[in-house]
Length: 119
Image 1 (cartoon, rainbow, N blue to C red):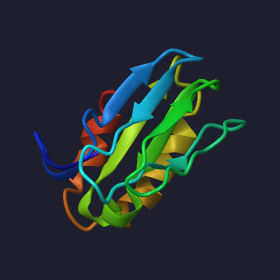
Image 2 (cartoon, one colour):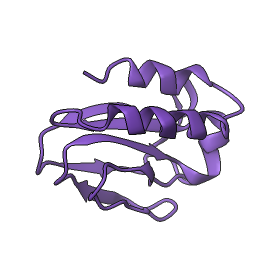
Image 3 (cartoon, helix red, strand yellow):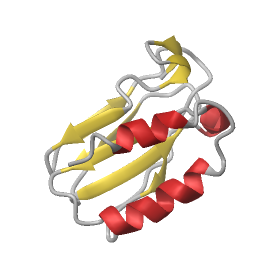
């Protein structure tokens, strides 16, 4: 969770992550003032809500695509995508992407770019 990175201001690096079922991802607040909060999870999966400026580790036990954001900076395009194993929820996640995209004012292309990496 960074104020500035390779893709500009207010970014997760990496913002697209592919993991296997059962693996964990740790979100590190490299710069203060950020959190990681799930926006969309596959059916049956648990979401998460990290606290501002705090590290949070999430274990992914359900396959599919997850969307997440930094609550204070989502409108600036601070969003990300995690693919866990096989993608069984592509149709549903497309609807969630459309909904999330409506809340983004800057860097609107990021989410589309990250979704292009989903296989």
